[in-house]
Structures are given as structure tokens and as C-alpha cells.
Length: 463
Ligand code: NAI
Image (cartoon, rainbow, N blue to C red):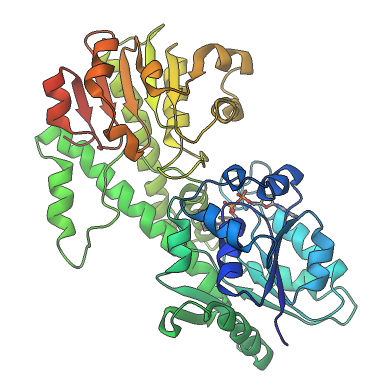
């Protein structure tokens, strides 16, 4: 099968950047990204690349180069499926909010819809690639749907999970640690694997392209996220112990990170991890383990989530306690709302939960984030359904100017590690705040001694 056209269903944080890089690196391939969300597609097609729906450093430049040349964004899902030889499925796979597996299992309804749509539309053989993160053995379900179309079309299902990290998506895509492709051991399966390998081989060195069976590939993605999240929960657990014992978690992290068996990355204590993936993927792993009766395995991984929830709660409790056990009516400024720096993604951001706790204590929350809109902040809180939309509006105000956001505040909480926060005029901020002026650095990014010299009562995580 000669590959000339590929399509991707789902123009989100994965589908958009991934296909943009494929289009840039494979100018002879026509790449079409489709989504049923017309607003999102319109934003991807906005003539001003500053308005694309996803903020990722460097993405605008790639979009400007490839869009309209061999990269297209469209709502015409069926047309794109019909024309493409390779179809990536990159739709969302959130945690189920209803029925069996509620709160744990991955909700595969969007995946199934895609499979049924492909089955209905396809008139010639297709390679279907799972790009979304999926429970192990999902390919079986997709294959069963595709194989019952009765129109004689042959499908090959590949698993090709995405390992990019938001905030560094473009660099991660351009220089991946590895590309993982899982497929069937049959001759047809191997041919399909090779077709996808050939796409990546346009810019990824051969020794970084790993091929496995489908189940190993599916499970590797869940395993990678579980290990990454586990490191954060492990160092966060130590941060609490550091606070009690006089140890400093930054020193501990450095000391253990120099052990080459442990490594220095992903050892930063914080208010807790967020993002759309870690929690949902671990919950999914726990659910899968339980469904096989592997209760010890399930309990082991569930602890990573329990620790993360504890860390968020501990942070908000510490704010209330330090502010003389009451924050009612007090302005508390959040610097950062996104779940990490260099992204406008707020899904599962620690800020949402810390704000929720503090609103329950009747605090007045002021928010400044360089990339997150006021509308999004309120939508995130409304989604929790803890209180009415009107109550959220009354309790939370977003600002376009960080200095205004901090004015008259009793306390500042740093929730995202945006670089610009470090460079602020902290003396000016101090002068405009209520006294004593508290700073709770949930990301350990500010210079502790500088903050204390200015006069702040400065609280870091883990020291
Ligand atoms: P997203 O929510 O940003 O994008 C998914 C898009 O799919 C949405 O725009 C939605 O409208 C569209 N969609 C859903 N069903 C559709 C259908 N039937 N037809 C057409 N469009 C449809 O999600 P995101 O973050 O891109 O994640 C996608 C998958 O990639 C998930 O499984 C996630 O776990 C995985 N992943 C995410 C990473 C991340 O950093 N966000 C990293 C690696 C994997």
C-alpha cells in the first residue's frame, strides 16, 4: 500500500501538534486533521496563527509553514477517512463518569464512535492507528467493530501511543526519546507496522523506532505515565517528611538524583501533578488490574493518586492554617492556573482543586495566568459542581495584570511554574499587599532568601 494521505480524528493537544510535525517532516504526505468540534477547527484555520487553539512553544511556526501546503484542518470527518490510507485516532479518552467503572475506567465511547464511522465509510484497505491512550486490549474491540462491516475491507490496527509532554510538545515530537509501534505478528500486520515506521523514519533515527506486539505497546503507555506520576508522588511524600524534620526536599532530590540508577529528572516537589493524563491513566490501570483480580497491583498504583490528592489538600490547608485559621473574605491571589508552564491546558490542574477548597472557606480568589482566560477558570470550577456558577463568579476574579491581581492580597499562591513569575518586581508586589504578606510557593520557583529579605512570609513545599 502506497501511503500518500493520512488523516487524524481528533484535533486536540495530541492530534494537532503531532500531525503538524508529521506534515512538516513529510512534505509529500497530505495530512488532514478532522474534528467534530467546528469551533476548534475554525481556530486551527484562523489566518492569524496566534489564535490556534493550543498554546505550545514553536507550534505556530510549524502551522504557518505546513498549513494549506500539506496540512489541513477540517470538520469533514468522513471525507478524510475515505481518502486516507492511514487513519490516526487521537480522540479523548476521559475517565468514565457513569455506569460500570465510573470514576476509574477509561470511557471509550469516542473511540468506538470513530471505529464505527471508519467501518461505515471505508471502501478500501486501511491502517488504523491508536494514538489515544487506551486500555490494554482495546485494539481487540476496535478490530471486532471494523471486521463486522461486511464490505470486505481489510483493516490493520496499530498501537502508536504518544509520549509528548505538553509545554514541550514540539521539541518532544521533533526529537522523541522513542517511537513505539505495536502491531500484529501476521505478514499483513508487519507490513502495516513498516508503513508507519516509514512515516516516522523521515526524521526519527531508526534505533529510536521500537516495534512490539499491540498489547505491549498499549500497556507501555499506561506504564510510562504510572512511573512518571509515581516519581512525583514519591518526592511529594518526602516533601511532607522534610517539613517535619528540617530536611530540605530540594537538597534531598539533588542528592538522590545524582544516583544514576535514580536520575535527576521528574524529582521536583510541588502542590501535586495535574494534566489530563496521569490521573486518568493510573485510574485506568488500577481498574484493569482489579478486573483481573490483581488487588495488590491495583492498591499499589492507587496510592500514587491518593498521595497526589493529599498534597493538594495539604497545600490549601496550610494556607488556611497560616492565615490564622480563616481566609473568609480575604483576597488570595493565584499566580498560574494551567497545570504546568508553557501550556494553556488546565485539565486536572492543581489550581482548580486548591481554589475549590479555599472557596469552601469563603476566600476571594484572584487569578492571573498568562495563557488561561477568565472564562476557562470559571468553567473549570463550574465543572466540579461544588457550588452554583453565580457563586463561583462571586468568589473568583481573573486579572490580565499580575500586579493588579496581587494588590491588597493577603496571600499569593504560586500554582504554575511560569518563568515570568520569577522575574516579577516582588518588592512592588510586597508594597501593594496586606501585611503580613504571605507567599505559598506551590512550585518552589521563587528565591526563598530574596523573598524573605523583602519581608514576605514565604512558604515553600518541603522545607
Ligand atoms: P483533546 O480533548 O484535546 O482532543 C480530542 C479531540 O477529539 C477533541 O477536540 C474532540 O472534539 C475530538 N473528538 C472526539 N470524538 C470525536 C469523533 N468521533 N470525531 C471527531 N472528533 C472527535 O484530547 P488530547 O489531550 O489531544 O488527548 C487525546 C488522546 O491522547 C487521549 O487518549 C490522551 O490520553 C492521549 N494523550 C494525551 C497527551 C496530552 O499531553 N494531552 C499526551 C499523550 C497522549
